[in-house]
Image (cartoon, rainbow, N blue to C red; front, side):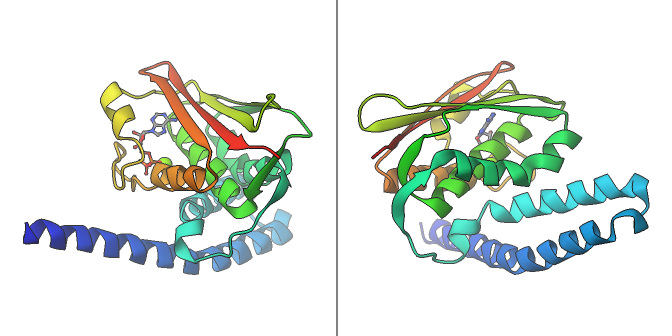
Length: 221
Ligand code: ADP
Ligand code: MG
């Protein structure tokens, strides 16, 4: 009906608004974090790590929309997957430590994929953010990748968090579908779009109270 349509429009508008605000917030956040690091010991030491972690948390929230916010030029190139992953893991450093999360990556150094760097960064970020949010009391994230024979490279990201019911799993990637009180339900939709634009594949396995594994296949060379 017309009312429903108007609601959808409102939601989309709200989404776009959130995204553009997120973008405006990114640069000042970076400035504050940089200056905090420079100030170092002048900041109360018992506040320092919480402040850093909270800044990182804000950064993560706004980073979830990196791709949606501004149309970035899409460049498909041969990229070292490990280097991209390391950039993303850097963003999670503080947040992971604060939440008692260990991230193990068992990654073939030479793994090369044909991809758009920004998009793959976004993909890792959104998947890892979910993995972390699924483990509010700590846990382990395993990242594995192997150079499989054939045209696809396989990357696997597992957590031992709360997992998903079949119903949630079926709806994953639908815009605004979230089970979190402060979620936006856009992260996995963005991941889906990115994988599709790379002509890749994704499959997710999950068990309630056991954890979730996201497997991604992306074209190699
Ligand atoms: P959001 O994180 O804002 O809720 P997402 O699109 O990233 O939106 O995820 C949608 C939903 O999928 C989440 O609310 C959650 O229920 C479920 N989900 C995604 N990843 C995981 C995971 N690793 N473990 C448990 N649930 C997950
Ligand atoms: Mg998410």
